[in-house]
Length: 579
Image 1 (cartoon, rainbow, N blue to C red):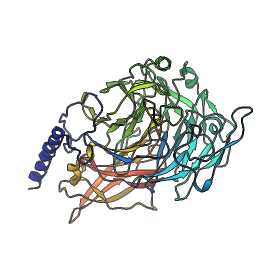
Image 2: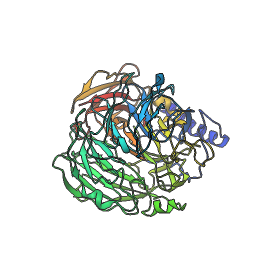
Image 3: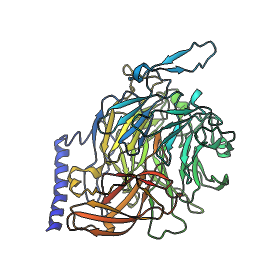
Image 4: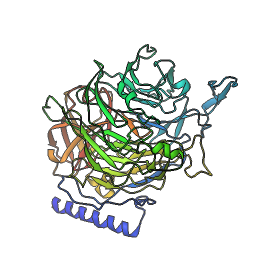
């Protein structure tokens, strides 16, 4: 009876979704979006345990006015809040600092008069209500970097001018505001990348004309030394196509670093380059060419091998000459290919694939199911003010475990261009927060082709098909005030009506929420845990037992969002802490 019911529901899902597509009905909200002419790849059934669906996602407008444009975005643990912030020099935002507070504006030129700025350039955003709380940054966060520390504090580095050598801290309490340590870094870390290390500390790599890296000092301390990285000097060009280098922590504790089109593996302890990888051909991949990159899901087993495979993916970008031509109003098509590289192999080669459309300035996000989402950006040009055209309105789903030529699926388009200075984030409920876009050097809301964007959307990926909701697990176990150890067995109780819940049908994943800016989500990683058993209760309650990652090289200490996934349908996530 249960099998018959399940087949019936799946058939109804297909018929209902097709009928909605033909009727163009907005269920449950603008289900089919519109406004993009991307090629839509037809659904192909593949051998998989995932429940079938034709749902290609939906969009909802969550906020009409975020007050501050989202150049930078990060989730804060356990608070259902995101922190959004911009530069401090793009003119007044649409929200003032509270209680008549103003900050002094640093004098940048000789003869300039002292002034104050009474507007907030950072807000705390409520993920449910869309309410905002203004925050005050003192120094300029323009094109800076960041990440969550092991205790959940946002540690944020660099920026422009007075903010270039600053380290900022934002703790997770209800009334906390930014704290700053000016002069903490050795140089101007503008367009640099920050990555957490296995010991919970941070490394900051690169920046404009900064061909070096350094380690973020302890709070209140100041650095006196940095370390040269020849790769950065060797890969710069006349438009500096190696900014915001892609940095990923491998499962062996080493750092994968890609700048422009070259990449290395760096040992952050010995400060030596272990390996240089083959050139990734086709063009430039880093800012201002602004491709995308992510560490593919790390799959763990009950007894892991000495080497746990780690694979990096890089997609999109721009030709080397694209930025110079964009200055003249000539917008070259963005790069359309992706490369995958297994960085734990001794002599890996890039494996190339082709996206449905070119993309520059997009975001690449790990989804709780193990799939990858490509979202935001443009099809022509590069990063920069008015340097791009033809916005990429349609997200693309990439399924790394499917057979070749069946991995990319074009999803429902938004109607809002998200180009330069746009951001996105995976939320604990599985939706995607999409914010920002400002191709202008100040806030402009009219008389420009691409106005400053303060609307915030939420995108519903295919696994949130309303007709799959009956198959969605609900986690019962709370991990509040509990820290999990490495290599620890732990149980997760959940409810799920489906009777056929077996290990091949289940995943337990944990997701490190990233700091996202300029098309790169720093510190992002998704880990699929080993499952030891599943126990069925007398009702719909079930228990899955899993094993935490074996070491901090695989999962740096800190906060993660944990999901229970049944046949491709994830539960709402819960925050856990490890380390």
